[in-house]
Length: 175
Picture 1 (cartoon, rainbow, N blue to C red):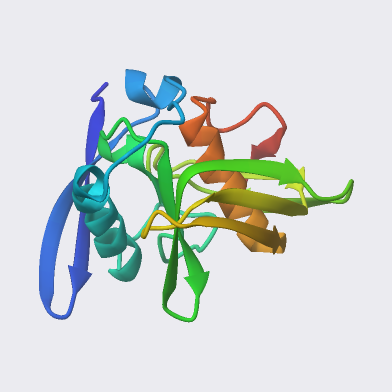
Picture 2 (tube, rainbow, N blue to C red):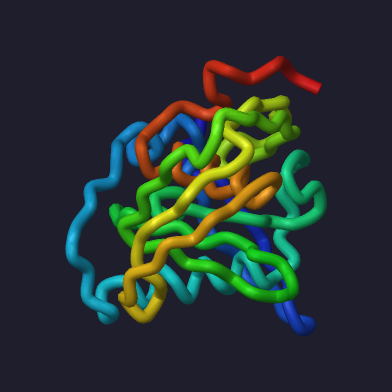
């Protein structure tokens, strides 16, 4: 089985292909460390994430059924603790050296898909509300509260950065 898959993104009449690490790739099983990154180091990675999230990439199914809503640096082959997510209304959020904390005991069950594990969709139960801390793309510290679908997207990307297998053990089966 291949360790990479091809993802084609179309935007403004042009297309571009990116390679995405599959769930079998060793980088997807490795926890990304909290490290200092210079903007020069991470600028290319963040630019690629923006291209994918703002383009019309089509994941197999799941969260954001017809669009890509999150991507981690290790899915692109970068060994950085960074992810980007679609925060809605055309806004992309970037989290560098992120950490998350449960905000309450409520849970949410959502259908998730993953660019690294195409053609798989599972229902996953996760905390319904989280607090995300990290640095933004300008390297400024932030704290952000997320709930519902956005909280699930962030937790999914954090699982990738923590080297956790997807689908997680708490999934409720294939749909």
